[in-house]
Image (cartoon, rainbow, N blue to C red; front, side, top):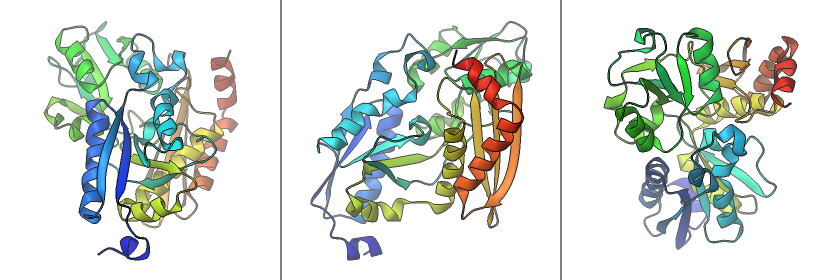
Length: 316
């Protein structure tokens, strides 16, 4: 028996709130199966929900309120007691949680890179001028426009399967997706090339799962402790601190990526104009024991370069 279950009796029932997309359900089922193995006496079930972000598919997220639209309904389920925990892709979780909620557990990170997916081309460099590339992310769009000004970047919404279908129908020459989602869904063979983090800095929290609970449920935090990955948590806490300091959201093209190097964290961040014409980058190394301080330092370095001017222009 693990230490957590010795100190805190496992509950008879545990309900996981999740979006109903295939990827979200994979994530929830993954956590469900881990919890069932840890606590066989507990009945673990999933409450599937459709969020506002899942319903509005004809407008880019940056225009309808950002990624927080994917978590509000799940938080309501936690608040009213119909669910105990909510499983999120961490990159979908707003930088400021509502009062009364906490990220109780951060799972081990999957591949954080972006993936190039195409039926006719091997990599981004092979795309002819004027090729249409689909992405839902201002972060990806700004980096693509900076590197490949001859390509045409178009919005791409929907779940992973919908995006792949649109590619297969010929609406796009290529699309850019998170490698982690494709791998988790068993669709890794669709990846034609991985885009290095040097060329496409990942989104804050990309590839990591976060488990949210109510702040007044410390018993659940103890219960989830065996699923918590301290190194991943340090990385994403640094990334989220940087984004918070820069008021990061879907409306802001920014990326942040921290990596463990011994007892240190290496953190890189960028802020850009949507068209990629202005691209500010910063890198810092700090203590793994103080990840938020490192994230704040990267944000400060970007602000000293003029990030505030880019952010102010985007908020007009």
